[in-house]
Length: 237
Image 1 (cartoon, rainbow, N blue to C red):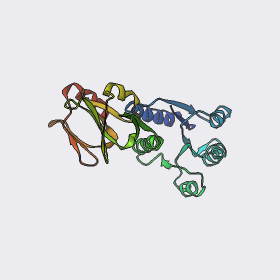
Image 2: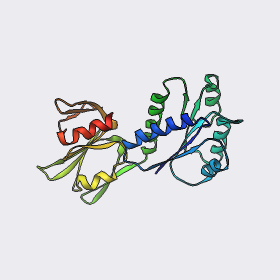
Image 3: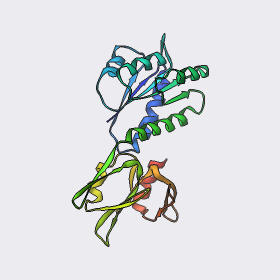
Image 4: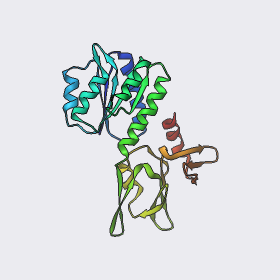
């Protein structure tokens, strides 16, 4: 479960952030919850001090008479691992934010391609949260762990009656089925064919006419069926 903790005294801004998060998380096979606050009050601090997992803070730099930088310093008294993103309409405070040594992931201006920058930052947050998450495979008598971010695609090979997992650097095989593996995949994984699951985060291009998918390492596959094309278009839009 990823917990997004959003605080801004402007309800229009919190609605935008909520919509961006929802749009991105719709594409990912991850549980999440959005906690919205309009002030740094007791209920906000209750979340800060709680032991809920995978916190991602998206904080306005100025709410009432309280500074998001001061709040971030308070968060770090309890937690050095959660991600903090600062929202601001004050360009001049950016240097101060980075100088504060509170490990802020990003500093987003409300005036500078705001929604697009927010999408990019949230995707970065998710990828950071997935860095230590791995797919656990049973291969013969051994257990192999593969980082989700390294997986390009999984495909069923009928000639050997096994599923092949293709990563950026290697291939491996397992007797587990795609149906068994899909619920375990964390990230932006989708079916493109009844015999193929791809990691959209590692896709370079999709040629819908020729049914060719090219990945970031320039590997290609042609497992893109009409049955899954509409669903894929909905996700990419």
